[in-house]
Length: 184
View 1: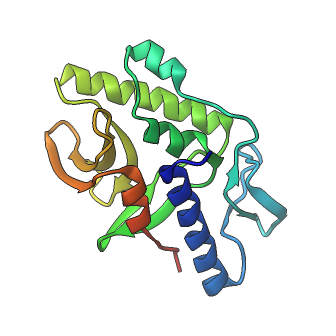
View 2: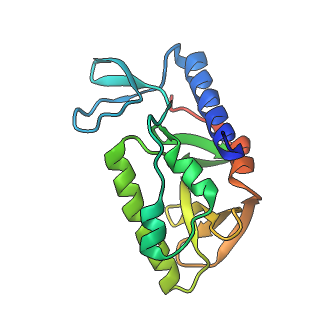
């Protein structure tokens, strides 16, 4: 069964795909790195570039190892975002502000993400801040978009400071408001 977050995530993937089709008559393209392959890569390498498309994961994964290590229960939307599919990060706008939605490209990327999640949670605990998980970067490198672990709200967070602003009541609502962007 798909959650609201998963439904909105795949809708965002489709909007991103459609934008590439409209502007480039192709799937999204990125530089090919033979040491950083993904099941979402499509077709052959052409001039050092590879096309790709978000794909659902073949087998179910979770973030139980993080929950056990940190003795915390993660908000389910965090797992929906990072454990549902393989995809490259997606450039978007949220209410006119550029952001990059963090996604998981391959299993190695998933492992790195989990390490970063643990470090982020530990930093927040040390600063006595409510637990949240980053989901997107902003043009200001000191700011991130994050999901508040206790409530599931999406917030703008300045690293090392208190919550700035609630952007959406849920991750599904936030994803629905994103407008994909592509580089020229």
